[in-house]
Length: 637
Figure 1 (tube, rainbow, N blue to C red):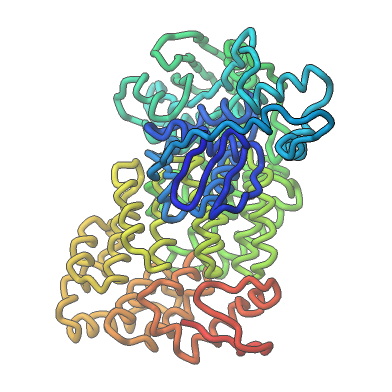
Figure 2 (cartoon, rainbow, N blue to C red):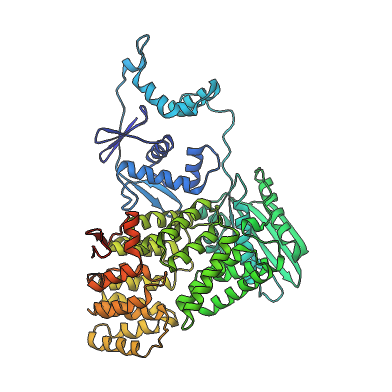
């Protein structure tokens, strides 16, 4: 069959994709993916179905599918941005949405019966693509089945890769005061299961979207694309733990349950037993992976207790208040005091310090220095752990060593397990250095790997906004409006779009959803139709700040100065905050387009060492381009 769409033809008989009549070079897996999507274009094809279709039940990293999707889009001219041909649907699968015409090829008798002694071109092409994978007569038969679809059906279907979602465990402790510990334990169990070969585990943040919600478990399984759900409860009473876990299939049937009533010191053993039991029930072989300092972990129960409690507090999607940060890094400091070789605790301590430096009203240099020391200690102990690499990359960004940060983020992506998702970190790095195309690629992969985590579509919306594609940014914000943890960042993002579009009504309506920290944004938004009055309010606010006012305060005034036509005042404030890795990327916001044209802006870019990084790597951002070989030989828009 030949499928015609746009300027392409997909020929399943010849195993060719032709674009404008030119045969495109495609990996076999990419061809099979494209063919399967087109043949099933009347519906959404789930990720699990694609894993089974393309890899025949073999276990592969989630990034493998995203890579094949990206290659397919590139081959047919879709590129994954407009998604006019292959659309990510409901963040759970893909659908081919272009109009398709089916054409039956004419019978080629010459090809069907080649003359004796000849060697058909089609056979040579097939051998070139597939011959390396065929060895021995049995493998040839398998290859013929895959290529032609004419071999007999196998005796038994290839079993699907078991997919498990770990739902948030419930806190059954006497005082119901162990929420952070229980959430941290759930997260660690998710990570533990994701390291079991032969099993795919839904990302933690997507599963946690169902925390506190009363949902039909069959609906939850369907929405998460999981064949099995692991749920349970934890009762902590002094040094005793009572953990109940149960495995439920996608039809709501209980297939395994167990209660562990043990001393708290047995927490590592309990995790091993739960993982082994779930794997056994799903007919998956399990290899024990005990906690190990060499992998960044610890064998100290008290240190581990403090760590998982802190992780739950710091990964709370609604994290906006400094007191949660203070609690989080106090627990992490305790963890590293109890076990100085606990690399993951050091890494998350560094991440917490960086976040605190953004919010705090004093001591920012000291906090940044503590963050970088913690990151260095983590890197010294476990230089290949994904979160250690993320923490170290953030430290490099704070020191404006962009090349080192880029290299560490790449290593973090390569070493991440199924429950870790460093793609968003790479996306934010790409935004910071002004490369929005690259950012969109990483952020899409982050969003597809963790579809119910609101931070991912929010970051995607920002990337589209920086590109000036406001309708696409709107679509991302609409898609995440119902996701847990979307507020208050959703309100900030809508307000950001109001600044980009110079839409005062949108700015005014957005500030309603801001937390108490957004009081300044609200006050000026009320006056936004009275520019002189509003500008006077902003200037008065700036004069009243302490010398070490945090970036979170200054950003509001920076945006308002730019909006009201004061780019030099905006640049003066931006210079004082742009050195913070969290805020550097906001220089590329559309509201600052006039600010970026100022000669003084080039000095800021040089001071941040961005121009040197772009020149050394040859990868300039979307907003600045070189005009010569000197430090100041570039222009920004």
